[in-house]
Length: 171
Image (cartoon, rainbow, N blue to C red; front, side, top):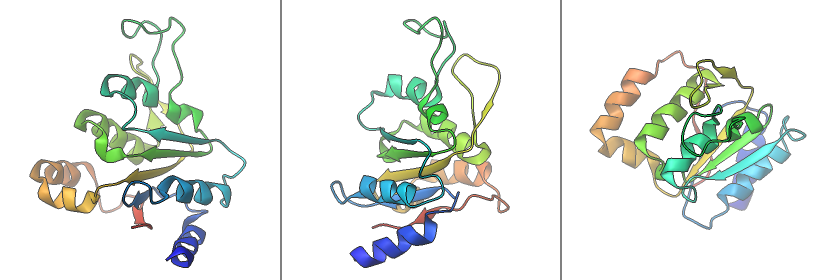
């Protein structure tokens, strides 16, 4: 199994496709993500790891996307770059994406499709050159097939000509 994982890492290390790692907690998904980054063409660029389950829902959006000054109570007056911006030219690893609220998932889908981010309270987009690796301890495809609302959203928001591929390399 370990050899198979290493072969899969080697096959996607230089890909810019969005990658989904699945497996139970403690099986080494972050280690695999780091290996993909370390051995790929973005190795000398930032690697930003985010445990989505560890950040409260009301903070996750501002942490991922950043914000402009004064966009909400308690916001720094100078604003803040988000984790996507911090990973520009490198890799962002989103662990436990299955724990994200649907509202944040829809904004994440937009980032996946466009490779652009908009800070909270802003009216302009920031282009990103970024590889996104996500991980889940749940079977995402099973959740997809059991959630009719998700299927409708997925069908409406994606096209057959979409360049990004979803690569499942670890179970």
